[in-house]
Length: 232
Image 1 (tube, rainbow, N blue to C red):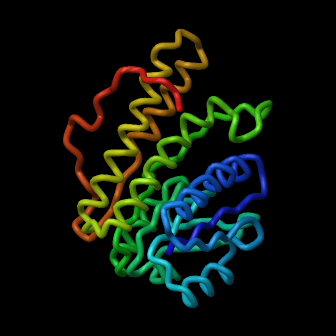
Image 2 (spheres, rainbow, N blue to C red):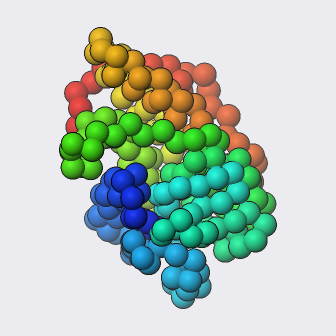
């Protein structure tokens, strides 16, 4: 089972929630039972009651955060390290949010969270509001690695992979996907492409999986660029 938290109350959360909606659909296609807490349902009361009632093994979040906090709908506090993060015990967590892997990730893993996938710094997503979210060619490059990582997480969970294998496979797929987007924009000689490269590399290098053994340390080959490939 997977629980998604998709706050949607301003431009960035609307875009992120739109892309995570694709992950909701993918999880269902793969055979996972899905609890989708979207918009006004992405708040602590609904989240805690869903986890307590149905005990989903996977939690996926997309929205705003700080080192020790994830924010739900309308900026309300959803999770805080050393306050209510014990609710993540026994679960796999993927949090697309700024900086939450700094404190909230380690704190929740210390309380029994099986793996926490998150970012150590701000997550930067370049958007062009003239496009609908799912047609934005700039935002796509930042969200594709997230969708790819979630797909691997779901498939590894369903296959019964052990936690370290799952963490490694998710990490390496996310990095590979970032590298593919980096290679794509590297081949485009524009100022916008240069900015895309700066922030794609930033987001890639700040993504980490945290498990009971600590932050996964990848082989150096993970960060090598790939040749440009056709866009999906």
